Image (tube, rainbow, N blue to C red):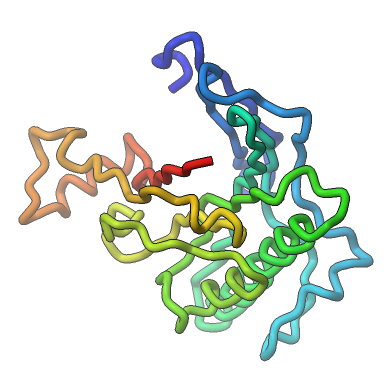
Length: 232
């Protein structure tokens, strides 16, 4: 991607974590400036006792992939982004699926709590905090356990206007952009970029997308990009 972008784009990334994955930020240096605030969200052992949810007895032992933090200057404003990818976990049995779901719920709540504590801290760098990425969220609905955990401490998940699922299988809203309360009124637009008909268009047929997905999933992301426009 970087090789195909103009020279005024820059990027930063962190080290490998769960599933040998890295997180990255790619940004247009003409529009934003990288701040000195860069790091990862880590819940120290003494604080993990506070990561609890009703009905879950297991302990929170930290993130599988620590959310990657980067602060940016946008003209006169400051924005802190937390790049997240929650654990999905093993799905081989009902016990595996339940354990994975509970671990994901705890990770979601840990992010929500961190955002809440940071925005209310008297030494905060900014109140403009955005947690974004792959939350492995089945449905952005109040009936969903991950959704409830993620929004428990004030984060909002604004609905995107396109209402296209973020996974190319059209089954889930895995990817989300969650904002702290002060940013909700500053959202102008939000949506999902549907690249289906633009990539491998010679084999794409909207009435029978299965073949396209089978071919495309080995060459491109199986998640569609989610975007948001803010007025800061």
